[in-house]
Image 1: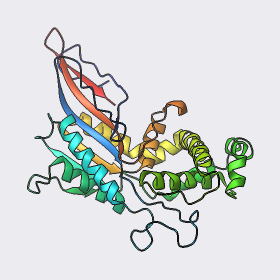
Image 2 (image 1 turned 180 degrees about the vertical axis):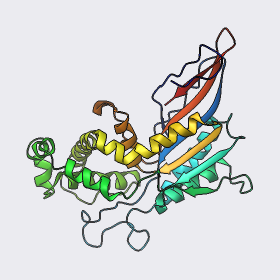
Image 3 (image 1 turned 60 degrees about the vertical axis):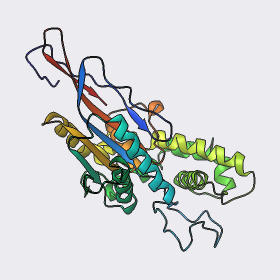
Length: 303
């Protein structure tokens, strides 16, 4: 428990998700409080699919325009909107120190730059520089990916592949349940960009079923302390150290869904309550200070 002030100091933790696409805005702290700091961990904006094997030859929508996994113009626009909204949500912090970090992945870095553009309304002189922090944000951890592949080959996943998801595996000629997750990613990318799906037979019905299967996979895939510790252990330690040092201002982290999932895993979030981030969604941690009747400050963390 972190204690600030002479007495009656306390720390309370609450779950906070900040979703650009779903219209959520922070409700603010209790009465007689002041927000000291906030840290926001965001998934990058909309991108092109990373797996092209589900597209008929020559039908990849971004052929000769964008590479697989690249941030699209829609993704940049989403992040600018997030920047504008967060300038309003965190207006009390906007004139304090603002730091922006990103993984080295181009889509995350470009998302961070678009966020900065929106947050600072294009004022280059005031804008924060984007700093790369691959030590905190893990887009390409071979060790973590190995654990995730092993997870998708466990008996629980094998039963799903032969049971509830068997008709989908057959319909798309899939051999591993991980391919079903990748197909869901392709469907999401096409739908968010208002593009036709790369298959026609029973398209709408099959797409809904694939997305439902993907949701189950994403709820369960990152469960486990080993996965959480490897994916977000360093990030969690950094978050705690940053907020308990000299907390002030706003920190924005432009990362990936793997960072958000891993952080929830290490915090032992129940699989039924896992926050599944869309493009340009985020989780945040806010630090507030309040005063008791005796005048002693109380620390209130919103996670």
